[in-house]
Length: 215
Figure 1 (cartoon, helix red, strand yellow):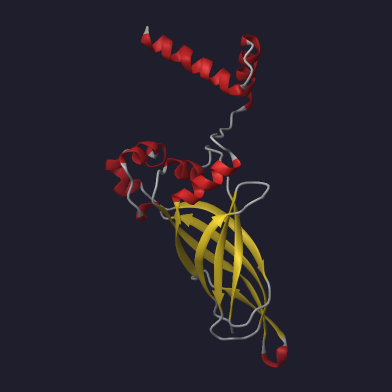
Figure 2 (tube, rainbow, N blue to C red):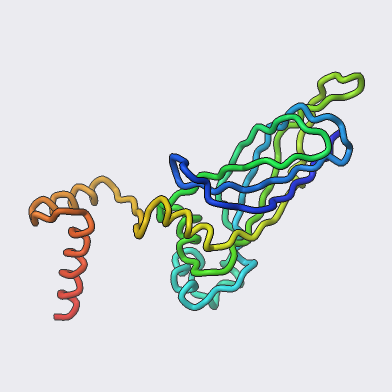
């Protein structure tokens, strides 16, 4: 019966994808050496946020997620990033596959807020594996087994890789989502003021707010 082991060997930006995506290099080993016909692999990826140090500027950006730094002993916790599924082709002893992971720049999403807050260093990730293994049993007969939830792997993703990805897809930009009512009000303001872009509309509102505060 196969007892698969997993190792995340590296990560890079996936070029020419429809959405920002990272490509993780995943090694799978089969110590029992039964011929593997295929694997339907499910992966949960978590951010082990309590496994790295944070500079002062990063702590300020993470207030929304974890509160004041003096409370982080209780509030700094693991965060769910995403789930992925992957169909793996036949192999025997081991194989190396690419695991694409689509990413969002929506700063309403917890993981995106976390990534955006970081300036440098590494992001500690935990990969939790499950799924189904199809393999050749005695006499070559097809057998099916489940991957244990105990199967895990760790990887430290360089922050610069995430920044490189977002800069490639959204150069010198950030992305926010608005409720329709707020968007309609902003759209009405943009039209009334004759402003050419959304950026100009937001900057005009910020300047007006700053002038009001200074009075």
